[in-house]
Image (cartoon, rainbow, N blue to C red; front, side, top):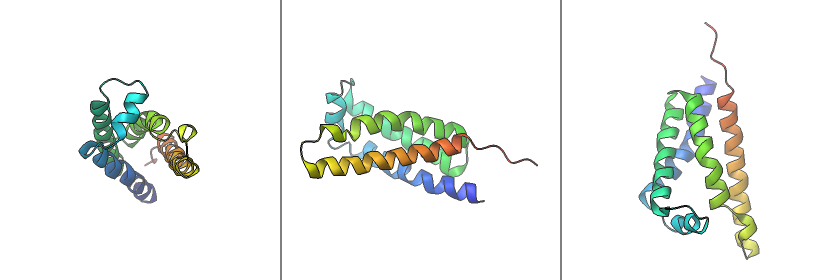
Length: 122
């Protein structure tokens, strides 16, 4: 039961953040374009949709290890492109992006834990 609750809690950020990115890409496509990724708005929306689906799978316990792998696969480029603190020109901007970068590293750790879970023995 604790593992199910943990996966549910971990899924919230992916479902809410993914939905927001899909619904309102905002300035995300500019960062994506600056990184040289083609079709930046489509890339942002696809990334958001993937996070919603992966987050829902994780939260509902549907193939949680696969869901965690998918979320990790989209979170890595999201973190590098979206939270490039080393490119920030102001101290405030750098600190804000460092916080978001660190948060995403923590999420990656949680996803890795889910990926290494073993099925319960009957």
